[in-house]
Structure formats: C-alpha cells, structure tokens
Image (cartoon, rainbow, N blue to C red; front, side):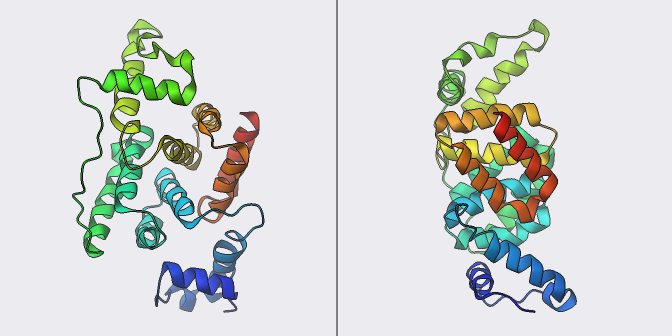
Length: 249
C-alpha cells in the first residue's frame, strides 16, 4: 500500500501500533479508503474541524446510520482524540430521542463494554439538571432558546388526540435530555443534525433542526464542514440529501 504520510500519522494517532487486518486482505481498497478518509477529507482546505468536534460528529453519525461495528472500532479513537467519557454518554443518551432505545441499546451496551476495557467506569457522575417536577418548565425554556419564542405553549398545541406527543417532546426530549450537562446547546443541536441526516427519511425534521442549528450559532459553513468530514462513513446519497436540506433551510 502507498499511504500518504498524513494518512499514516492520523491513523497512528487514532490507533497507535494497530495494524488493520483489511490492509492484508484488501490492500488496494484500504489504500484508497485511508488516503481519502484520513488525509484528503480531514485536510480539505476550508473544511477542517478540531479533532474533538470531528469525533463527536462521527459518533452521532455512526448511531444515526446504525454503524455499530464502526462505532466499536472508533470509540477508543474518539477518547484519544479528546472526546470525554461524559460527552460520549451524553451523545448516546440523546440519541434515544431521535432513534429510539430499540436502535440505541446496542450502542449503549458497546459503550459500557469499551469503557470497561479502557479502564473507565461505565457508571459516570450524573449530569441531570431537572427534576420530574420542573422538567416541563425547563424543557420549554431550552426549546424556546433553540427554536425561538414561538415555541412557548407548544406542549399544549396541536390536535387534542395527539397533543400528548407535543407534551412529551417538551418534557422528555428537551426537559430530560437537552437540559443535561456534558454538552452545550450548540453541540446538542449538532449531534441532532447528525442523527437525523445519517438515518435518512427525516427531511422535514432535518430542515427544522438545521434552522435551529443556525439559530444557536452553528452556521451554514459549519454544518457543511460536519457533513464533509463524515462523507467516508455515511456515503454520498445521504451527504447530498443533507446538503440539499442545508440549502433549503
């Protein structure tokens, strides 16, 4: 294989002294993949991200597209690249609101196993800032901060037969999870963007959350950087869908 020096260095930072089995069985493929993913993409002019942000987005994208094998492989690298254990758990927890526990449970299980293997206790310090009594109030506050003042009263809006879903969105999605410590609001909106575009089929919600990202300070250029840095992991169709939604929003 003819790997660039940049690709070699980046790979070594992620996986010190690790030699890929695929490099022996599929050398031509790995040559092109590693040179693209670990040199061309991460060093593209105007599209660079700091390592921590890049890997936060990677983990969210892996969950969105159900890439459990890649998640298992890359989580130790994410820890080496500056993502803290608390931040990892917060990404996993928030994914439940957008993917459901049926799809997130394998990632939570893998996280706990990998933490244990890395000498990290899976039982981390709690990050909740709300109680069962004030989660609705605090959820509405953060929802308004993200989407705007027009969200006031959203919990009691909509058709009566489905109004409970709006109430759950405010109290559970925003009150239980967006109010937690460990990630700030900008980071939480970024990972939500990743969950939505990586799973596909959620374009109306994706456009809404792109607008929310912009509202909290994650501008168009930033979101394009997030998408660009995840092309090797998500592929071109969902990448192009995400870019179209960014333009529309």
